[in-house]
Image 1 (cartoon, rainbow, N blue to C red):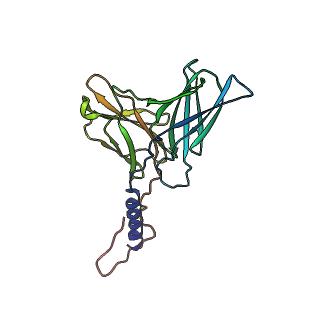
Image 2 (image 1 turned 180 degrees about the vertical axis):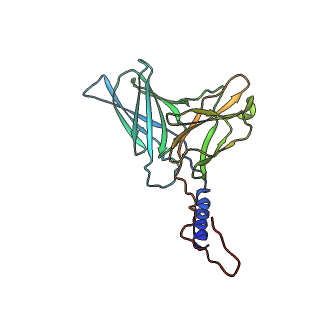
Image 3 (image 1 turned 90 degrees about the vertical axis):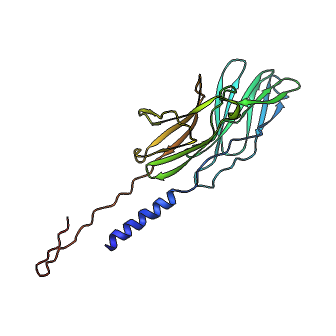
Length: 253
């Protein structure tokens, strides 16, 4: 009995700790770019990107930033990672336009993409902000996707309405999830802004996507990676003995 109580207490403690607050990363904002002309190489320029640090929970997992750069001239795209909220991009061509977007990453958490920063390396240089790099202004996706554990192999997802949702014909939301190199599953169209998933495979990484469903179209997806934990099962009691007292016999299976 004592062993059973100890095991139950450990499981109860795990369940209480796993139902903690939602985890999320805020979207990088106020991306700023300074164009630096190279006097030794007049046909090239450098761009120094900076942005405020995002909201995140202190953890042993490092906070990283993913910077994506597109070139309007030749349709090329490059991606870089950095552990600080600044990046110096060197050797860009003169008199060309480049588009920069930034997202934050910590472990399996990913933020939304920032607004696009358009940089033209002309004289004088032109720097301006635009719309989010991977969203459709007419059919915007949900915002602020968060997640928390409800069990070692279960999650609860939560999100906010898309921008200007009151003026849009939003029918609901659709959630899809997929284990790495596995089958993709899809929910029905739901009207609430949360969704629970249970019975997933232990110690496996899943990709979750949430989309806004409109009358004639489905938005681009808001995505998040999550990894399930190891299950903690209750072991059957062992080494118990049965003792006969008078005519009463205790039997333990």
